[in-house]
Image (cartoon, rainbow, N blue to C red; front, top):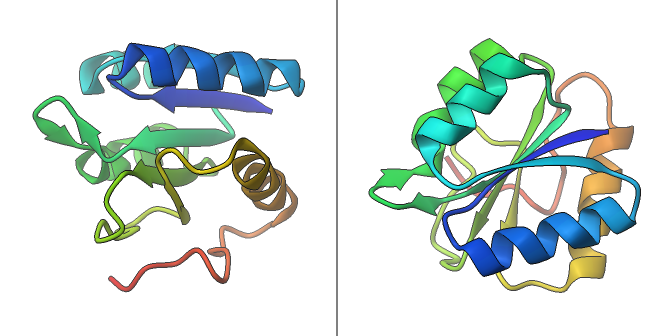
Length: 125
């Protein structure tokens, strides 16, 4: 599974990238919204782990462009604030949450077909 990991926090991004790669995922990272869009144009992704606060950009603002570039890609909004809604994403994961829980969510998303959202991870729109 090809994963785009978007987070402006270098330590968090690189740590999560290493953990996902250890589990067999092909992970490309981006530290800004511009980098993320460039990576999306360069190759296809099955999953985008998208930090909600990327510098002065909200991750959810990128979702329409992600959907155009990779219509089948799943988008997980990652945020330290529980008030951030999925808003166009497929799931929400709390920043700093346990890696085994994120891994279970990623595997669940990869198993779901047809673009449906994952029950229990939705936030109201």
